[in-house]
Length: 85
Image (cartoon, rainbow, N blue to C red; front, side, top):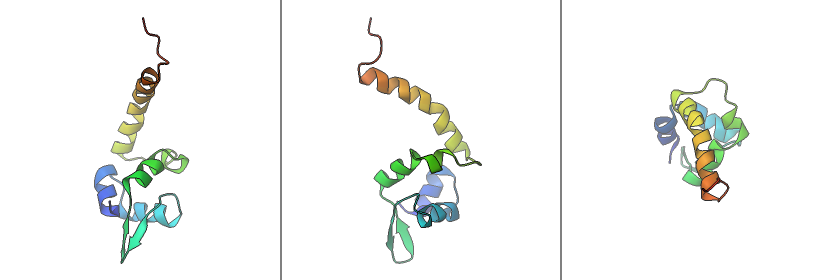
């Protein structure tokens, strides 16, 4: 993915994505004048403290955080931690 692809997915500006890369929060490879971001690194960044603690979150970010507790419940069921009846 490029910084422009991340912008389209998350709603954060390309300049924000490039800042995360320059600060070392988001891993990427530089090809010419653009950064290429493997999806694995993007998911890793989404789970990081710097991403979760962004003060001014986009609507996509807010919705993703709202859905996260549901994922936690699903993960518990998949791991056999749920109370099977």
